[in-house]
View 1 (cartoon, rainbow, N blue to C red):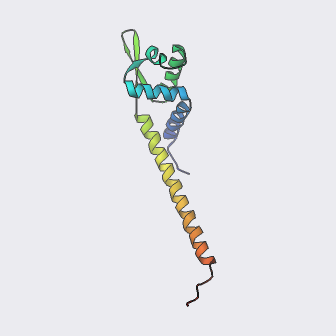
View 2 (view 1 turned 30 degrees about the vertical axis):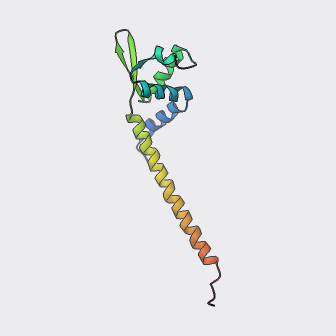
View 3 (view 1 turned 45 degrees about the vertical axis):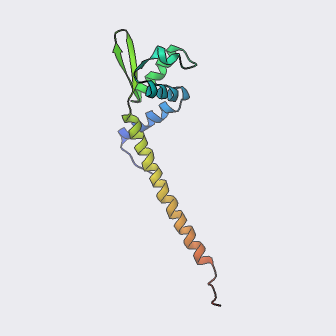
Length: 123
């Protein structure tokens, strides 16, 4: 299995847990498309209340995926891509490990198949 430092594991775990919810994924899509935006504006595009949006944003914030900046009485949220980048790198490493393992299995299977064939006779 791919080893990763404890801190990195927690970061990836929190990102994956945050992304498990379709509303939170939709929030990230909206934030990526629209830039800085308030929870009230986000709630207008989703089938949940503003309070639910704020709770979802809190989960995304805790995972390092978004951040909020106070502007007067409003809090404007924006995407923070660093946590996504770290998770994508972990996933790419995991995929490369599986590719190597599958290539090994393929080589072994092909060698076994070649060895099991009877030798060809010349004509």
